[in-house]
Length: 361
Image 1 (cartoon, helix red, strand yellow):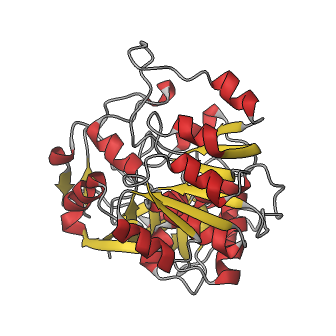
Image 2 (cartoon, one colour):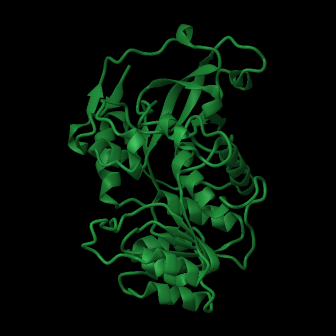
């Protein structure tokens, strides 16, 4: 079978292998299923892995050759012989499925041990034609979604869901027109967050440096948009839009270049969900001005929380909202399997709006 591999040494060194051994139904252990991969979506994390830059978690450091990517929509082609209580008994051949990112993170707060089950580092990923999964690491695809749409959900949409609902009880997502959500940028997580927030009845503010992307965000239902190039004091604009109250939830995707302004325009008692660092990282050596986060958090009684995706039960909770509202994920562009390296470069360039998908089968 064909699959892509990386030694984590650069986007230009991705390798297409055409004779990788294919897993067989006979090799399945109890609770496992064999999946034919139909579509794979590429996340910014995947570009970091391929370039050797994914070094945020010490327990994940290695230089091994691996198959990248985590997000799939696939079709089950074989299930293991198992008892009725086995997780695989809930699936049958022909079911369309998506994989959860951290395969052991099934409920509750993620633990460090769950990081060892991350697809596409440290576990072999999904940019391949066939892969074996534990059935517990899969969820069913709602019938109305296409393969490409479904493949976009496991990291981007689940992260967005948790950015809004991580402190909400399971089954009780945040709702209400009086709540403001600020979404930085128009990448996969922010675009998913926009769609989710609108489905939940929340009021949305989107920032971008591109008027074209802001127009597309408005077409998706964004209530307010801010071009942070032409309005560099975008935090003041957020306060103006919210009549001084600030945003209840902020998708903090910028990092060093945006965090101070996020603190400036978050609501009292609000949540800053830390998702990315596209504007750079704070220099721990002190060559850049350091934020006094204690003072900033205390000033408005803020919660600052890192977002590492979410568990399987939250994924399924999110899918109920998707199905109820018939949310159609935004697919920016689709690439052929043999052109996956080009897809990685496109994602890394930052020119996309929504998600980038590779057509496997």
